[in-house]
Amino acid sequence: MESLKEIGRVESGFKEMADPFVMRKKESGIVLAKEYTEGLYRLSESRYIQVVYGFHLSKGYSLKGPVYSGEIKGVFASRSPHRPSPLGVTTVELLNIEGNRLVVKGLDAVDGSPVYDIKPHASVFDEAGTGDVDRQWAYTEPRSEMIKLVRGGDLKACLLLAGTLHGHFCPGLSSGIYASVEGMKRMSVHFSDGMEQMLAIIEINSCFADGIQAVTGCTFGNNSLIYRDIGKTAVTFAFRGSKKGIRITVKPDFYDVLSERYPEYSGLFQKVVRDRSGTEEDMTAFKIKGREASFGLLELPFDACFDCAEIEPEIPAYAPIVDSLTCSQCGERFMGSKAVERDSRILCRVCGGLEIPCLTGKGIDQD
Ligand SMILES: [Zn+2]
Ligand SMILES: [Zn+2]
Image 1 (tube, rainbow, N blue to C red):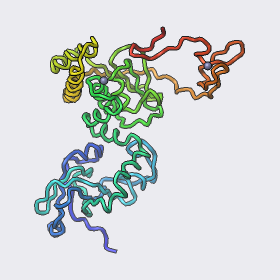
Image 2 (cartoon, helix red, strand yellow):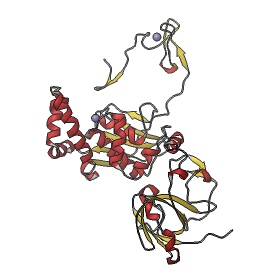
Image 3 (cartoon, rainbow, N blue to C red):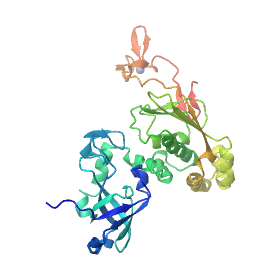
Image 4 (cartoon, rainbow, N blue to C red):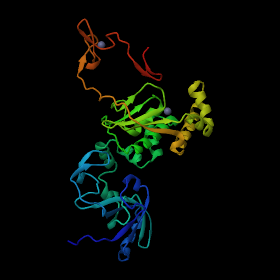
């Protein structure tokens, strides 16, 4: 067999390895050795191409390790640069070819990486079946799509995806998105698998809270979202086993800034939400203006909207895992830790006649 030939080199603004999700957002050049130029004939007909290159800065390898989502996988089940044969394969967008120089977008190779091969990406060869690849990926990494956007700092795309949870776009949701993406960056974390390792401690149950849940994956249901009934638009990001956390709050004048920039939205908010007196047209206009304001907010500098402080967070214990019991009155099953004993009968809290705290728009409601 012929040995691998270096056919060219990568030109990139990245002199050393950076987050591949960040690198992939930039353009790079690939300069081929002149003798191979003819091999580029008709490559420009392909919008996407595959680049096979060397991880020339990578030293050593391990057969198992964490992948981008934090999961542990074997090296051949990962895209790690530390591999027995340090080769990378990335599908990139081909923007231009001039002579022996290609301009591409999406290449996560550092400056000077040797290039060994270039091929057109062809869905007939490269995709097992359209849609299947993404679905299979999501099956093992349910949050892969959001992780990609968070790591790439793609705030607007995060907001779009979060809309599937929240149902509409509003400044509350987008400020939750902004606080989460920036908070995770400042904490140097890029994933949460909803297993209570990372916690988001929120102080308000408003639209803001859905932005936090969508981006961080810390949710009401997986117990990684802790609700403190204070009513401040604030969130603290914390990790079990770490004393370092950060608390992000919206600035006291945040809503003044917002209403100055988006006066129509503020007026409609007053009418539709506060006074509940809007017509159907007002409601439609409110949604449109809310969308404008929420996407627009993401263009403001972070420090203009939020305050951020390092704190030592109070971390609650893991959610208790308890056996279920059956209520001897209503016959329904309930978490054993919620049992009420009356005349040596085990009852649920409802049959036991307890007041049930309720999380409503008001917060935790005891009456
Ligand atoms: Zn909302
Ligand atoms: Zn009962």
